[in-house]
Structure formats: C-alpha cells, structure tokens
Length: 178
Image 1 (cartoon, rainbow, N blue to C red):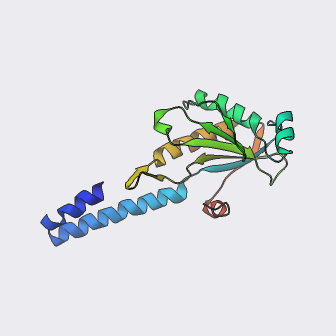
Image 2: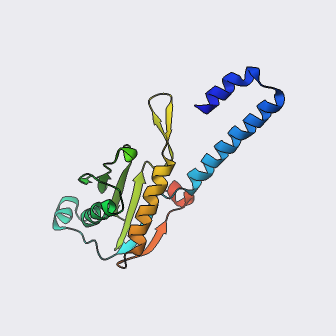
Image 3: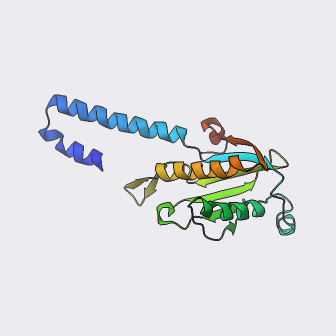
C-alpha cells in the first residue's frame, strides 16, 4: 500500500516534501471518491421481450422472474468478451456468475422490476469499487465495474426491444440500502 510506504518514509522527508506527498494522497483519495459516485452499477429498463416462465409463475406466485433475461444476458455477454457460468435462480431473481479471473469476485444480477409491469433491473455486485479481502487487504475493482457497465450499456441500449433505460444515480441507490 502506497500510504504505508509514504508514512514510513516521513521520517526522512523535509516539510515541503511531506506536504506535497500528503496533497498527492488526498488527490488520489478524492479521485477514488469521485469514481465511487460516478460508477454505474444498476440499470432499469422496460421490455416485452422477457416474459415470465410457467415455472416462475408456479414457484414464486408471479413475484419474481427474469429467467429469459438471465438467458439473454448469458448469451450476449460472451459476445462482448465477458465469459459467464450457468446462471442461478435465487430467491430475489437470477445471479449470473462471471467466469473470467479478472471478474473473480463480481457477478451480475437481474430480476423483474416491480415498478412497471414490463420493467427489469440489471446490476453488478459488488456495487462499490473497493472490496475487502480478509482483515486488512482492500482491492480496487473500479476498472472491472466500469468495463461491465460499458458492456451492459451496449447490450441494453442498442437492442431495439429494450427501452426506457435508466442508470440509477447515488440517490436512487440509497433507496435500496447501499
């Protein structure tokens, strides 16, 4: 971690050098905060192209669906360079695990968005760019999240059967407990 290295070397720095380094660290931290607020992780849209299956109607009483959307995304993502494993039915919707090592701890979720009869929500998890590994290690996955958002945007915006696409902003994210 660059902060640890710099703090250990403060003993050997002049006051001017220390101020410069602290300003540099603050700038990096500010840029990370800025990235965190700019990350796009949840996109809602509308489409008649992803009907509820008979199994979903039976198992979830019509409350949860997205099988056809999960299947669609699982077919489209590899065409854009993102390999996936078989999607999994969860009690909230569908989880699409990503097969590539660079996306090791990231997955995509999708479900019917009950705000609209024909509404859907697709999101990446985790939605924050810094993830904790163990007690002390933190990993920055902002590049991977930005890459996935770009791919999802391309898939969902360019399809003529999908409309009213809307990436959630920070305020909308807080409504779901982020």
